[in-house]
Length: 128
Image (cartoon, rainbow, N blue to C red; front, top):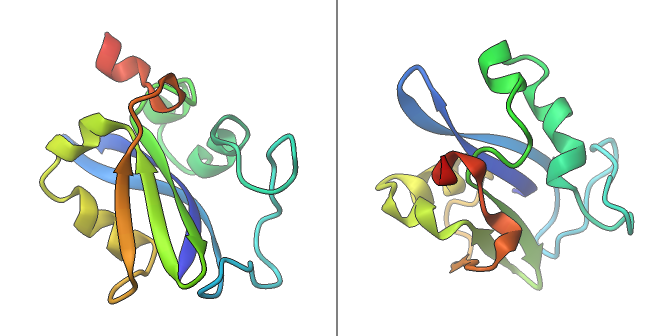
């Protein structure tokens, strides 16, 4: 299982998740050899700081976008369950939950999806 960040990007006219994540156990403890946390507090991943790392192998069309251009969210794991916080617009994507389960290797793991209506997960793509 994995925890970390995601963006819902459009690639080849198809929506998919771009992730920046780390392998962890059921309590969210990151295994050795995983990317170091890069938030200001040093206890999680930052979308802004992770964007260049997550997009380094993608086309310039994606890389040149700001870190907050695409709808985004995060997967947190603690106490044997996963919580997915995300931009509410992603609820309109029929395969959103399936994509999160697949990309973060959470099949059969207890989880809840929490749309975040605050400005924290707002995206420029939606506002254009």
